[in-house]
Length: 336
Image 1 (cartoon, rainbow, N blue to C red):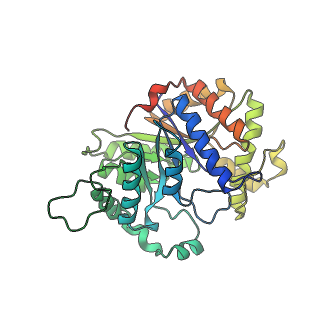
Image 2 (spheres, rainbow, N blue to C red):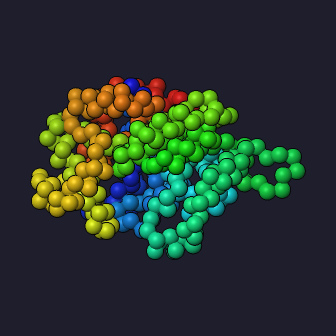
Image 3 (spheres, helix red, strand yellow):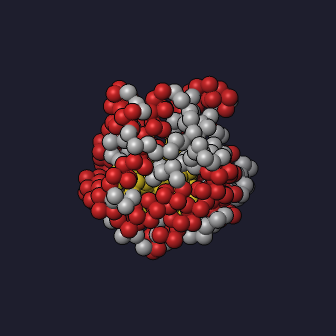
């Protein structure tokens, strides 16, 4: 079984506020660290009441400050929203504070709507410069040359690892061209997973970063004592995705007994397609699902989303998934 990692959504629920969500994220990271998860990432989302990770680098510092061995990073920073120089300063600072535990995953999408994009003061066409911005950012993490007039302080020399994130062919091609590790978001965009992995591996060019391709696959996993209980917990995430479909940015909702009473047939079809690769069930069901996923994709690493409403039950889900995967604490020792 490849290493397991976690994408932390910093969910604000109907029973918590933003501080509660962030403290829960830190607590979950400590829990995952003890179970042998390799890394925990948070994502940049804006203008979403139910997600508290908009100031992504600040959230990473909060989590890293409460842990000691697990890797902590961005999954990801939406680079078109920022000047690469500023991101280098932020993540260089994190690397100076927390050593070689910081990852920087980079996405091309804005992570928000057009109205919020205008508030960020970044033009929509900024995404067209994504490949050049990645290369520029990478250079800021290299040691400063003699006489270099522009230096990203204190980033120079930290060589923070960069990842390319994607849900389409574009990210796969860019990661392959630059010889960087690649993470595919099949936890919400499963349709292009296999073609994207094929493109990444077939076009990969070895680099100073990687000699061979390294592919991470994102997947929703919820584990509980029984399949029935896990499916009930899963309704929280199903309702969140239905809310996105409705254009509603609500707080996370507690699970319900009958999801079909919540959504329309059209919403059900759309959400089930987006969540098609989810693994939901008991330890035995999750183990079979993980084996099938790894066998189909050849994933080098699995990054899971376990979007459970109740914090204690989410901690239990993470523990049961670790049991299903046979994790050990040694999984946190690798750099990649």
